Amino acid sequence: MEQAIDPRLPLLQDADLEGKIVLLRVDHNVVKKGKIQDPFRIDQTIGTLFNIVARGGRPIIMTHVGRPRDKETGRIQIDESTSIEPIVRYLEHKLHVKIHMPRLDGEGDEGIPGIDTSINLAIRDLREKRVDALYLPNTRWFRGEEAPPDEREAFTLQLAGLADIFVNDAFGSWQPHASTYDITRHLPSFAGFLMQREIRNLSRVLDPERPFVSVVAGAKYNTKIGPLSEIYKKVDTLILGGVIYNTYLCAKYGVSIQGVPPEDIEAAAGLVKMDARNGKILELPYIHESDTMEGKIEGHFKVRDVRQLKKGMQLGYVLDIAKESFDDPLVADTIGSARTIFVNAVMGYTPHFTEGSAVMDQKIDLNREARKLYGGGDTLQEFKNLNPGLYLSVMDDSQYYFFTGGGTVLKAIEQETAYGLDPVKALIENGGRQPV
Image (cartoon, rainbow, N blue to C red; front, side):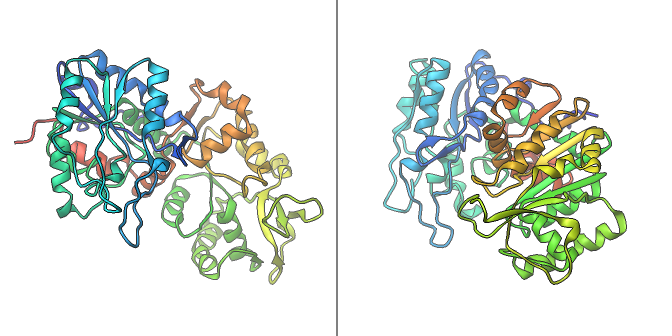
């Protein structure tokens, strides 16, 4: 059952935009090596952008792209690989508008020190409609964006000085940074339409129609312990894939699988013990074992039956779920009878082992009654790459929803609410009112 938005959350549709400069934070983090990988996240924010302009607002857009800051040294690398220019060109071409990119120079590997007065002329052009929007440089190019809270206040005040209103439509950016969190203390702040849509659909995961089946996979077990424990509490059935499944199999059956570290196996013991009591995990019976990670080389991989595993066995690399798993009567019946299915999973080691993900999506689609919710990022990209026809056919299907931020969804599940995410909490605390 879909839940209403918390009435404390200030909504864009309630803001007075006429003649206002609107600072719009989006999550257009779709550029890799200077090229857009998939414009899905951009397209999902166009409704908010159109609404702002249609109601008399003048938008200044900002997003982060990639990780230009080195975590160990703190150095910020500014180059074309994390530039917003491909995003701007895409929007100009798609919307037939003129978007200005203010030039704000950085200093060596220290990043951009701040926003100087040279931007005032561009804002005047925006007000007088000589340009349709401004798009600031990658927020992570700025020194203050990810700085400690006491050091980023100057940058936050500079951002606030550009605009009259702040709108957050970046559900995928859950970290409390200057452009997603601190800014709400200085401008009337509102949730954009994508933010609202993501929160509403997240309620279908947090308060699902049952039976509720979740499919979770990942490259590292230790990063999924928190959300996996919370998902386990909510589901009727949990299906695992990827390294998470490998780790679970090692912990349950006392086998070793190449590439699964002992500390992860130890961490998975708790899940095995919990499931011994509750029996929620549905094991996919057939897996692909490979001698090498170099590719799917004939004669170097085989299908192995999980039910034949015995303590002490040593396996090579387990790199995918075999398609036969989804023909297993129990698996097929569980997926076919679900009423809510949440998928945050790439089942195989891409790009060579993709059979599990492709067949899984096809089997899920056969259930025409279930609400099907997919996490963003790699999950969405694999769906699109492996089943392009299916992807196009379900984009406007009301039974499907594709989140723009898979990591954010897992974070919200771990907290058991979307309203505990720092940027969302900051919007609520500000309440859309002008700070005193």
